[in-house]
Structures are given as C-alpha cells and as structure tokens.
Length: 213
Image: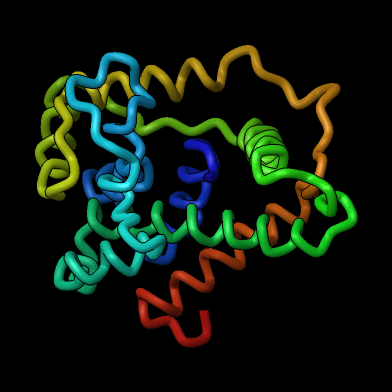
C-alpha cells in the first residue's frame, strides 16, 4: 500500500478540487491517514485493531464497503469520511495497478508473491521520499478536535495524543532521508506521478460526480 507521504500528496492534490481550507482541510488530510493509525503504525497507540477492520476489507472491496456504510456522509462531503474513503481507494488503486502490471512483466515472471510485495514496498517507499508533508497540528486543542472528528467512524478509536504522534512520525520520516543512490525497480517517478493523477481523476468520477474530471 502507499505510504503516508504519498497519501498526503494525493490528499493535497484532491483538496484543491474540494475547496477545503482550515479545519476542514486538516480533517480531510487526517482522514487520508486514518485507516492506518489503529493498525500499530504508531507504537504507542492505545488501541490496536486488525487491518481488515479499519480498512473494511471483508471481501477485498474496502472503498465500496466503507461507502456502503458512510454513503450519506461521503455524499455530503464530510471531510473526515471523504478522506478515509480516499485512503482506501488509493490503497486499492495502487495495489491493483502494481499486481496487474508486474504479472505480465518479465521482471515478475518467476517471483513469488512475497518477492513482488517487497518490490512494491521499495518503489512506493522511494516515491514517498519525494514529498514532505505534515498535518500542521498547532496545539492540543487542534489535536482534540481532530480526534473527536475521527472517532465518528466506528472502526476508529484514537486519542489526541495519537494525533500528536502522527505528526511526530511525519516529521521524523522526513528527516535525514535521501533518494540519492536509490533506484526504482519496477516503476519510475514519472509513471507513479501519472498513476497518482490518474487515481485522483478516477476517484473524482466515482465519488465526486466529476464526469469530465
């Protein structure tokens, strides 16, 4: 699955279409990370939940399952729910693209599923290093409000302290890392940029009613 800087880059590109600003923008961007938070991405998270619960992956159709439950909120452009849905959609879109194309690539001909997964994670990690994003949490009041919004989603159970830890992880992930001397194995930066924009257009058509997005 894409890493957090990729999710936030996608979120920043989509938020321009949504015209969210201020608190709504922060809620939407948090939503873009939210399905991962209770999965142990934060070492000190107080409540851990299985990936299939927070990602609504009961039959491998995460975004459709989430939309079925929160259709009213998504259609009303509730920022936290829309961001959550966008995370699930992004995961599915990127994963589908990778496994569909490597299946027919000479590179993937004799590789196991685990070996393919490692290539996927490597290329997504390298692409992640092109971006440096934060939620821009200003204070504990900010974190409290975001946690309250996040906990509207039944699969989520987080605290303001967890939100602050998310910001800490984003800052730490962006320190001291360089793409120098690293190379893509399967993708290219250009292809991943195209995939990101293609995914946003697809999401906009499917959930924002933009027929010509």
